[in-house]
Length: 426
Image 1 (cartoon, helix red, strand yellow):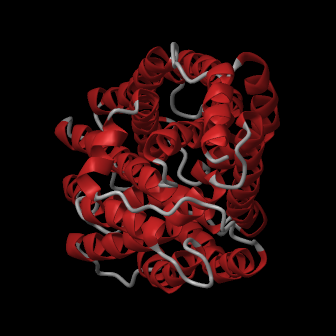
Image 2: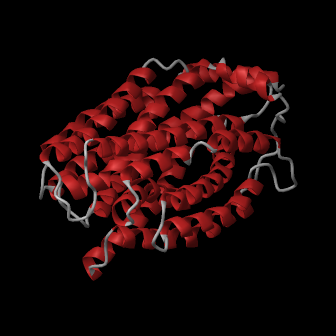
């Protein structure tokens, strides 16, 4: 719940808030978002490697999650509730702290989830429940600011960050505490002992993992561009200063409604085909945003609802497929190295989530777009924003679908892998 509650404001509101309201230049914000990920190149693989090798009486996953809580809480407080004036260095420093805590929580948590079931379709149901609960919190974090706007005329980027930040700070210790104290960790795993370089070579030889990682990376890159630009699009193209949070509420609300459909549909047509179809339809529907202009906010919402329903697949299917490719590594290495795989996955995700905003904001700065409230941009700058908002994500989603279309690890192939694993384990 707190992971998803904080994720969207970090991606959608922080760039706009620091770049438009707090006076940090767009080019500086773009550079900070990119530089803050450099440290992940060390921390992600290190924490994944260490988590697989952690051996305590509390398990090997939960200790890392508990240690992440105070780090995350401090970073969220500093980023969501800054005391002006702030600088690019301030934003960079606290983003580095945020991503360190995020890594300590995210990698062991997702590795733990991948170890809960060996079944191809049950893994989709697990990721579906996890995504539904996370998105439920995400939607709640949008409902509260929307109600604040409509009932109390209390709204805007700063006010949204204050409300969501407060809710996240309350939920983070509560939900992580319930998880680490109430969920048992399985102890029937094969210890990870393989040295680093041989382990990397074996991972690089895992063809389905490489294809899945490439498709997901580009999917995330498109999503990151869309998320980074949505507030700029609503405020700059549609000329609506307050309703960005309502658009996000509609999108994530329909994400949530779409999850049960994608869980069932992927069981019928296969995970990768269901994901590809969602990506293609999402890409085509994005073209509808080209038709909108000033005053058209409410005409935007039907497109948002449809793409939100399709986007529900992004939360469920790739995460379920990740657990399947790890089984190939278990078979080939004789070890349970889930956290190491999730570390590589996490790093790729973070790179996408930093390159996407960096690219989007750099292009906005290059075309002379001015995000200062009240500024009227030239027609060329506004058109550039609209084209970037549409074609950046749409082209990424279509490319992801092409990469994943002939993904080789089908349900039948996975059953063969699991049978060989069970036979090897006696």
